[in-house]
Image (cartoon, rainbow, N blue to C red):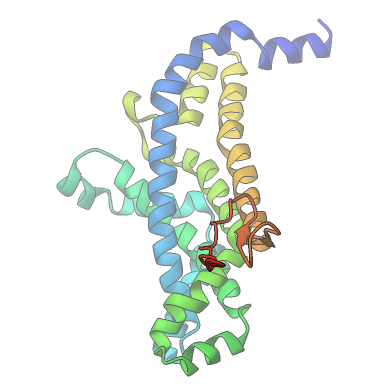
Length: 265
């Protein structure tokens, strides 16, 4: 058998893919989304806290944030998941029973927070100092200026980098299988791995990879479109039929009230 035929039968077997597809859609995909979305939300909140602490003038806030970031960015993701998932397993058994998802989500969140915190910190630091000074001149406190003026601009500037980290988080969710999963808890990669081990054919693993692509590629293009929209803003145009009427691009101008004409009599 020639190498191309062997490659095709090993990774592109349609029968193996059709056999694994229903379980991937009904079990693997929901579990992957639960892990990724939960870890993304918690990691983003922790990351923002790390970013603000890292920018603080108080060294008791700045130094722990820097140490945390260095440690969790330096450790391999698999090692962090094993440390938390196995080390805290006795506590997890007492709280929520034999479900590895909470500890897996916690581990993924701690990893993501280290990267997202640096992304947010770079975005906040990229905002011009005059923005903060202008907000303070308008009467905002430092906290209000950061929350209402600086942080929204900083997050908008690093939106593509933030989404890239979320995409990495979706892929890293496959490492939760190290903690041991029940049949109903398996995510995409674990289901593909089980089918490959049972059938001796790797097509199910390729199908799992295609499912990850279906999750990440549309997300990337959607966020890029949003980022372009935010950077371009809405164009203001003048409607020549109205006296001073303004219309935003893609919108209809509101008619201006007309002054009643005087009766010539």
